[in-house]
Structures are given as structure tokens and as C-alpha cells.
Length: 218
Image (cartoon, rainbow, N blue to C red; front, side, top):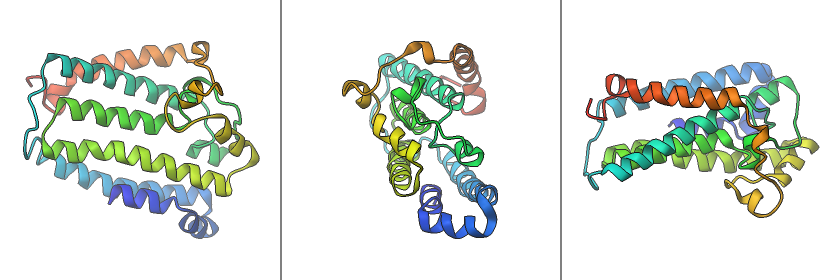
């Protein structure tokens, strides 16, 4: 329900209908409330059935360590996405300020937030390989892919000229634009405070995870 309502709610016919009656800020408020109303019950059901179902394998040290690094990457990508202006985001739509040139994390993918969700899901798929967990965390990967495809189609159909140029110069698939020579890594464009915050946040989550969510022997 969460993924379906999220994607259907952002489709052009539905968006145009509600925006014409509620304005963009009003639509965003309703959209966020619907997302919250579907995501919270989803989490409730999961946490009451965590680790349920068939266990595909017992994750060893290497797999758990890999999951840790992927999770650090997810936090890093997410924070870089939040501090870098992106024409694909709600803030750009609300402010009307459209950036046509990719910078920082956008050079890797124009959907860094969805990329972060996918990495989050992948890390937990590796660390918690039960059927119930894979259904829940696998949803983050599926949602990230479908959401990126949906945003691209919507931007191509109704986006500004600057936004369409942004689409042409970047890639949805991570690193594809760099491999094709359209972009470069440009490490100097990354925000150092956000990089430091990602490390601190990762350590805090690692320490508090057993208390809040279990796992790691907690």
C-alpha cells in the first residue's frame, strides 16, 4: 500500500487534479500524510513479525561486515542528497528553483535518495536473511527502482527545459553517466560536514541498534 499510494499519488493525472484544487503545498501535505498513514502500519506489522519465515543462510562475519559498509554508504549518500539541490525533489518544486547542472552525489545518480533507500534495503537483506525480512527490506529496493523510473517519466512529460537537460546529463543507474563520460566524480563537490555527520550517525545507529531494533547480539 505504501509503494502503490506513493507512486499513484505522484502520477500526473492525480497530481494535476489535487494541485489544481489544493495548490502544490496543499498537495504535498496530503501526499505526506497518506505516505505516513501507510508506512507506519507497515512498520508495525514488520516489527511484530521480524525474522519470520524461512532462514536462507546464517550470515557470517564477512557478510555482516559488508552490510555495515553498505549501510555507511547509504547514510553518506542520503546526507549528501539532502544538502545538494536537486530538481527532482519536492523542495525544488516548492521553491521553483531548478538546478540544471549536476553536482556532487548527483553525478553518480540523479536519484541519490532512492539510491540510499536501495542500499539500506540491500544491507538489511544481507544481515537478516529470513523470508519475512527479505519481503520488508526488499521493498525498499523495489520502491527505489520504481520511484526513480516514475520520477523520470513525470519529469520528461511535464518538467522544465532545465530539468530535462538535467535528465539528459545524468543517469538513474548509479555511475552510468560517469562510465559514459557525461559526468565525473568531482570529490571536491561533496559536503565535508555531511560526510563527517554520516560517520557519526552510522556509529550512533550501530551502538543504539541493539536497544532500538535488536540485532548484533542485542
